Amino acid sequence: MSQQLIEAITDMREEDALKITDQMLESGTNPLDVLEACRQAMDIIGKRFEEGACFIPELILAGEVLKEIAGKVKPLVQEQVGATEKRGKVVFGTVEGDIHDIAKDIVVFMLDINGFEVTDLGVDVPPAKFVEATKETGATVVGLSGFLTLAYDPMKETVAALKAAGLDKVKVMIGGGQVDDQIRRYTGADAFGRDAMAAVSLAKQWIGG
Image 1 (cartoon, rainbow, N blue to C red):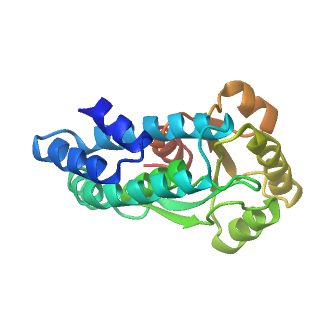
Image 2: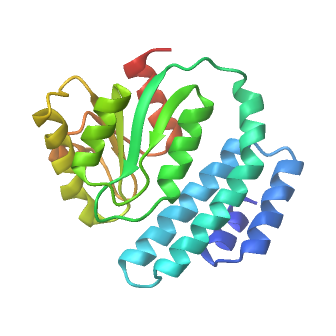
């Protein structure tokens, strides 16, 4: 049913997407598999946006559908994970010039339920705001999300801004869209994650636990 959910989300069939989600969860599907289907749908929508095949209203609708699905999934994932003490602080946001929040929201959600204190800066976040939030919160990990290829330069500028501000010891992870190790090297980030669980694993490695 994962493919059916992906198609419902990418076709903007909100009612069907929620119905399929309910059916998957009621049949015992791992809630993380539901989130993975959402991630795959998000990738497809992102590519369509870059190709001019869909527009901002569709992105907003997809984001709203995802939030509704996350509301159904979160309690079940929390049951799996169990109670967790706060492990450390993370600053997260979608970089300047990019307004996609679907991928970011999934990662923030997963970091939160795994015990990290996350400061979510939202979308279209300039480098200076990442620097300011990192200093204010004392976060030791910064996550940069970007769906579009135009996000690569702002990611690079943000990494440079953090270093210029003396935050050399802060670890930076990037992710979203077509981000891979080549983009990681270009931006100067410490690592990239293909999905939300990869982001959680990196945060655990860097912060501990």
